[in-house]
Image (cartoon, rainbow, N blue to C red):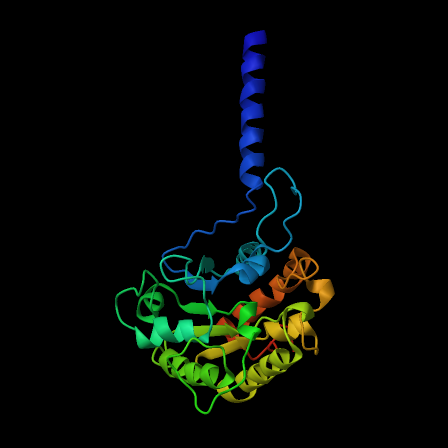
Length: 285
């Protein structure tokens, strides 16, 4: 009897250890079904903060689930939907390089478009075969915008408003070639004040305003989530209280937890209502 009880206790302890270990990874793995509506989120570190939300501590036996996939799991259960969302770094650090600015989307998706990967990164021709909706964004160095020159150079990686606009126009025309798919672009991520000049910050606001007021057109398959507005709240910089730490332009996990539902709500509204029931920040109208 004693041996049986001991074995049971050891087995139970092993199960608890496994659950805690996997829970500490803070991962929520969704599994797509045959008829799932599939969503791909392309991002780097700032996007990962929003994807995960709060990460401190262990919540319950199974750990804390990542914010965005957990939101979709709950929404599916409550509404009988079958939305599958996944994420990946784009582009990867190797071999392309850790750059996800207007030039890089233009370079991979427009200049090097086709049915083959470019430097191991998926083109739109490949992504749109596997996913119904694609979300893409830039990280905060997109806000280090230099002064314009005499003319734009669409093939230049230099961060200038004139280049951004030329590349965005080409990206937009490319996205329109896939009318059966939907796309959501995040507006630019902002720096904290210490990491950017006022002139660069003003150019970033000008770029965001141009994207919202001119680049984004009604009635097509391209939509926005105004991340810039959520970070800055009408200012020029990522608010200090939303920063991960002093001098860090990454948003905090607490901020990520707060805005993750707005991000997810915006995605669902784009799918179900072409974005008509939420504003650009994902708030219900």
